[in-house]
Image (cartoon, rainbow, N blue to C red):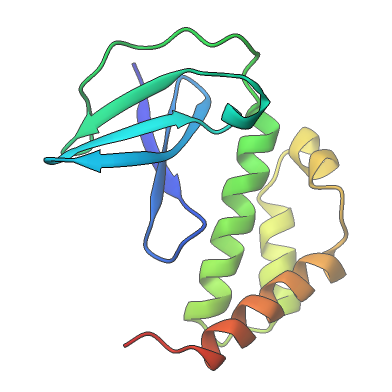
Length: 134
């Protein structure tokens, strides 16, 4: 199996991707983290658990196709927001860098232009500047 972790929505968080399927945090208990399919709200119930970043449950069967392009876009946007918060690079540069790294299908799925990504980066930077971490 190929378990990898990608940036999550919250600063410093990560979400696992297993065989192309992305998971989100469900709960934590005694060093074990329980994850559910990122498409859980749409009736997909696949779950996994990890301990020390290693899979500790059987590989689940999903009732939907892998969403490679959507996962790529998700990771790209989370990375863009992190870079906006951590660097002083111009947001247009960060947006162009984000789009440049995407394949054709992911570029199509991103469904926005560089100006939209620049706004996303600016919002994240403003949010970070208004609420600096301790």
